[in-house]
Amino acid sequence: MKDFFKLLIFWACRAFFSLFSIFPIRKNRVTFVSYKGAQYSCNPKAVSEYLLTHCKDQFEVVWGLDDPATYDGIRDERVTVIKHGTLKFYKLLCTSRFIITNVDYLSYIRFRKEQYIIQTWHGGGSYKKVGAQTKNINYFTAKRRSYFNARTDAFISSSAIFTRDTIQGSFHFQGQILDYGMPRNDLLFTKDPEKAAQIKKRLGLSEEQHILLYAPTYRQIIKYTDYELDESRLKTALQNRFGGEWVILYRLHPMLKDTFDAASHDVMDVSHYNDMQELLFVSDILITDYSSSMWDFSLTHRPCFLFATDLRSYQNERDFYTDIHSWPFILTENNDELAEKIAAFDEEHYVNDVIAYHEASGSYETGSACRKVAELMRSKL
Figure 1 (tube, rainbow, N blue to C red):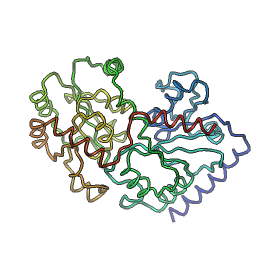
Figure 2: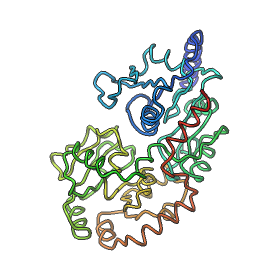
Figure 3: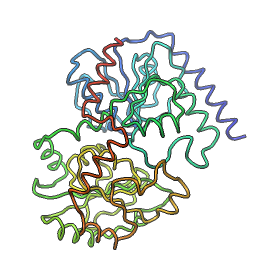
Figure 4: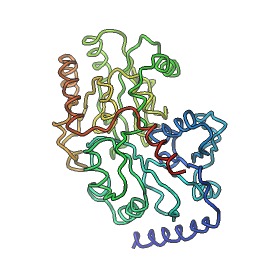
């Protein structure tokens, strides 16, 4: 019965928003939405900034954000920033030639055939299951996603296995696959010491300091302490194996970022730093568990360790597309194993494993995704 009422509301919204079809479509307008308006980040940000830099005034750029008044991430006067969810936002959205988003939530909009929707998603590789392949997905969510995926024109893919497992396997998408790699990962192919220094400066770090980024994925837990990472022991292991001064950055999921008290730990909390790619760009080592950030970071060939203390329970509840032991990243399940495997880290062996993994996965990542998206859009003006 609950799903029935949700569907009634869904269809009422589609009927209401269809009223915006009385307004003509602006042929060069592109509206960007990242994480339902929560952030200026990820693949939409990368494409947006490329258009502004390389396509001059060919596109009218619109961003929908939850709190545009206090958001300082966009400093370009050519960008229209509008509060996400307002009637003005929906008018701009419904009159845009292009819509670029990284989540599948716009199913309640009845888009016109002249509009071109690009789904970038917000992860690559083939790791934890999403969409229809997750356990206990409810009817309404599955139905809502099916409407949006059926209307989406193109889906950006990071690799052949992402296309197989996620785009087609989980989302049952039958439209155009853009085998470009993820736009947000173009940054990770660049060699820009000046940009790295600027990011470190914003973080309050010196160029000489080494960075370990800890970025676990979200689970149904209520506090960060459930992750069990021993920061003091970790820092000692890093100094013993790699030398130099190390800083540990914590980037928790948005649902948990306000539960962490960095003052009581020898770490820096960067959970409110919106741009994950900038953090990956300046990090020397990544520790995660099941987050697809491991795919992004693997493009740098820098070390990635998996700290998976709840592997068995997570696998039972969520499961993976591929066997976690087939991934090239160094798997650990407790602090003892983590310290031991840091001490025994073999860089040459690890890099060779990552390169072989990219080849076996059919990676599409080349550092030119933004350019390819822009060329596609220009061809449709």
